[in-house]
Length: 307
Image (tube, rainbow, N blue to C red; front, side, top):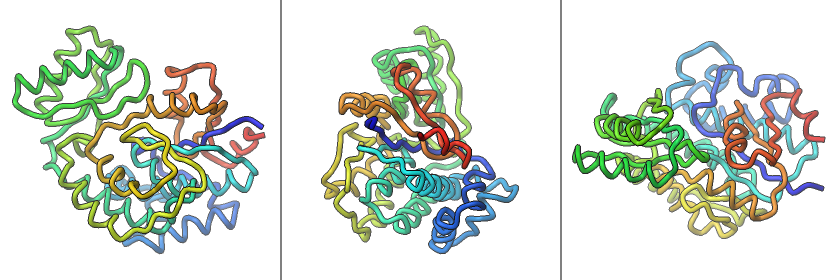
């Protein structure tokens, strides 16, 4: 049996209709969505399955994404697939915590609802920004951010280490724009501003993290049944005593996804199963190690690929 990791995408992969065929064809998958809906203060099923704009609004996106991922996880587990470790990118870390048994699904839904609201409102619209920097090594991007901060007196930092040659920077919009100019001059193949509602994973989100800490203080984390990889440290975690603190820091700290994947490879993982909407993480894997297979599970038909 291959050593597999279950991995879960973050915000940005969402679309109307995600998890719909699981919901329509499997009673246990339907129960996941229904339980998630019962835990929330908005119509989750409408946001997931009916034409709407709310699915792309952070305060709704995050809960909808988590519900879709855990719904798909239920189908994957029913298909008999198992893993030795879990991980998720940003929001996906909550699905990874559910998958490894460290966090109750209903608790996770309530937390990410608040997380989305706090992240949405932390910085006034238009003040912050994020850009993907393509084609430069990490040290050059980090130096470009430092120069932009010095010149502008504002905040811009690496926010997502996605894969070799793709790093997202985040912060005050003027500083992000200046960093983009500096990094173009340094040889970036592309600087692509992202359509996001805030400067996520930057120090400007510290207030959102502090509010989230109050919510997480009342959440009980169980001992993990198998390890997960933490975004903030890119380390394997089995002791969940510090998980709440790590989730608070994750809001305003860089997501070390490439480093997390390399850790899992070092742990002997031979195949990854990307559970949830899109194929973002599979795309990153091609840049990290093209030889490692990734099975993407977006719908019922994908279950056949699990073998």
